[in-house]
Length: 252
Image (cartoon, rainbow, N blue to C red; front, side):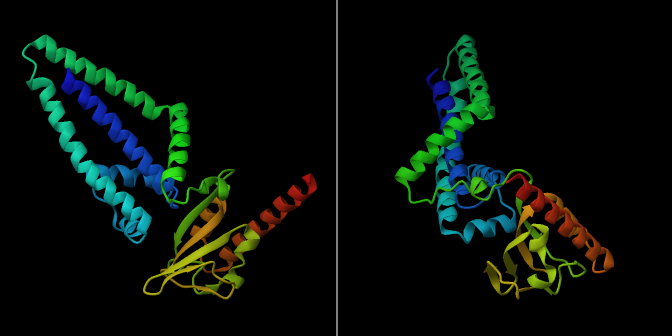
């Protein structure tokens, strides 16, 4: 029975550790989904995709979090496996083994409910956020709230292809602001990342740009070609954004 209780405790502690790490990673600017995936991957020793690994390794705070998870994960997995084996090896009767199995199954069911519960998630996130602010030097920010990432607003990365409507044009020429799109940065291979680019900044093929705005405009930009059709789509969303602003001003 002690081994079964120990196993349940280790699994619960592992889930809590990865949750804390996921929230900490999210506060460094990663999306919630990517932060959770990276935390679980590091804890279990799974691999990362190359692009996401680069984002982790080039950021000192993220690197420290992942490194700590790897160390804790190695010890946690070994201990969990040992406890699982002892749960069924140590008991000298089938009744004891079944009792240990019942503890593990019921405990995991409760833990699964807690992980899936929105109420538990919100409460746990508040507690973890307060602890991170108090006991760490991580800059705890709710980036989703700061950037107003709802009402169909998103932050996205776009890889600029050679035949893209965006390619070989300056931000002034593209005039994306009138569509409600803001270019936050340009990542150019061999030259690094340019944050807060000016209007004279040119977007080149193979650049990866970070943009903020409405998701429907992103989808249009992805599909635009370097012809009159692309310009027509641009004007369509310029007019749509102008109408939206006019309606908001009318409400105020």
